[in-house]
Structures are given as structure tokens and as C-alpha cells.
Length: 427
Image (cartoon, rainbow, N blue to C red):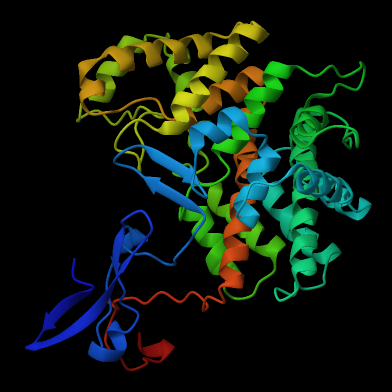
């Protein structure tokens, strides 16, 4: 294949380099386009625009492939611990035993919050959305850790990474517990990373906490499946904020805000809200399946199909099994979860959905699991943010180490041409 592409405009032609990735992906390098032609490209939503070269995640939506640093998502979700995956994403290789032990210890040493930050949390009204609270608290971490990160120093970078990896789970647990009216607690230094998250979140004040290995395993899988997903909205936000040389906490806070939206991380919340609406309308799933197939009907079946995957979401296959195990183990009696199972069964057998490959996606199953665990619907996206943390860190670190330029998209101006100012008394 030619290693250049030719662009012709107004009788002139220029050659633009064609780049090839390691998985046979090709892209036209247009960074010199404006300088040579005074033209820019227009790509709303950046659907066809590569903003960077990255070695972190490979995603093939047509084939349903997702790999972290070359490792298949199925292998990682079923064989690895979340902290192993976090280390892999951030540093590029799976850790050996000594590296993993040190990483966990160093994170535990940072797993506390300045008491003044607790006062900020307590000042939020009870109606505040957990994602807004989490974003604010993450940004506030900057005030308690004002030293900027020297990206030329491996020690500085490592310290910043372990600090946010240690503190964000505490903030997530506290946001969840405040919403649930539970006292704010720290974890147990003796526990592993995921086990500690579960303990901080689910421990009741009036009885001893007993870990549930099935819940812990499902939580581990969910966090791994949500850990990275290439250049999505929140990840691109983290990179573009970080490109201004904003610190890690500020960049992660911006990513949390981007994740909040219902078209991104809020999708699993939208799934359960849809299921609730179906229940309140009598729970007739067949009626809603027909509404979903009717193009004239505004109803949208949430949690089916995916913006990127044109085949089955590879993460959904993995988490479906975990969802079945959690529901069976907890024995939860919940009509909303019964509706979810009915919708799933009908969609997997209905030719309309099968032919269009509108299968249940990871948001569908993650919402079901979180609800069964007793996590409030508004807190689902907070859990998503916790899983995505190592991916955001990895992308921020890669962007800074690569010395990428500050993000500055262009535009096509379509407003008024030059006008003369009219004094107030003459308008």
C-alpha cells in the first residue's frame, strides 16, 4: 500500500503521509495540511480523527475485539486481579509478584483523606448527584497536594499515580455512603485493593463485615472491563486537559465530569431507569420490545447495541456470567431485575435484534449487578469512574511522556461577518 495520500484542491495537489499501526490500522497524517493549503478538516465529534498515537488499547468494533497492551480482555477479566490490570495499563507490562506487592503497599500508604476534605463532602446537600460530588472532591485533592508533578522524574510520576489510586476509592466509598446515610469509614490495610473497596462501601455500622467472594469477583471483573476503552469522550478529555500541563488530579476530575453524561458513563444508570419505567407501566416487556422496533416510537431500548461495537460487545459476554452468579448467590427478589432478564431473553431470540446485532452490552449487565449489590442508581457511574481510573492515568502519563502539544481543535466559522457597533439608544 502507498505510504502517502494525495489531496487535490483548486488545481493543486499535496502528498500527505499514511501511517500504519501495529494492528494494520491506517491513518492519514494531516498535521501539515493547514500550513500547506490553508485548509482544515471538519469532523463533528471527531469520529474519523485520530488525536494521538497510543500503545495502550486496541479496539476493533467490527470484530468485537478489545485488548489492553496486547492482552485479550477475556483473559484479563477471567485470570487477572484489577490491580494487575491497572499496573499493566499504566506501566506497559504485567507486574511480577514483587512489583505488584510494592504497588499495593504504596497505594495503601496513600489510602487516607485529609480531614478538611471530609468537611467539603459534608457540605454538599443530600440531593447532590454523586458524580458531581466525586468530580468536585477529586479536583479538591489538588488543593491538599499542591506540588506539581515533574514528568521528567519517575519517582514523582509514580508517587502521583499511587496517590490517586489510593485516594479515589476512599472518595468513591464516601460518596456512596453519604448518599446512603452511612458513616464514613476507611478500609483495612490487611486487605487487597478490590476487597478493600467492597469493605469500605458495604460495611454496616452495627455488625461485622463478612466478605462475599462472588460479589468481590464480580466487582473485580466490572472494574477490569471498565478500566480502558481507547479514545472515548472522558479519556480524550483527560488527555486534552492534561495537554495544558494541568496536574493529574485536575485532569482526572475533568474525565469524571465527561463520564457523567448519559451518552457515556451514565448509560448503565439509564438502563435501570428504563427498567423502572417499564415496571411502573405494568412490566409488559413484549410491549416495549415492539415499541423499540417501531421507528415512529420515541422509546429507546437502553443497554442494547453499542456505538463502537458492530458485533457483540466482548465485555458483555464476560459480565453476563458474573451477573447470573451474583443474582443467584444474593437471591435478590426484585421485579426490575426480573424485567431485565425477560428483555435479555427476548432480545437474544428476536430476529429483529439478532439480525441487527443489537445484543445486550456491558452497560446493561453492569447496571443489573450494581443494583443487586445494593448500589443506588445514581452511584453506578461513580463505580464506572473507579474502574476507568487506571485507563485515565495511563493515557495522561503516555500523553505527558510523549510531550504531546496542547490540544487546540479548529473550527469553521459560520457566524455574522463584520458589523458596526450600534449605540444602545439607536437599537
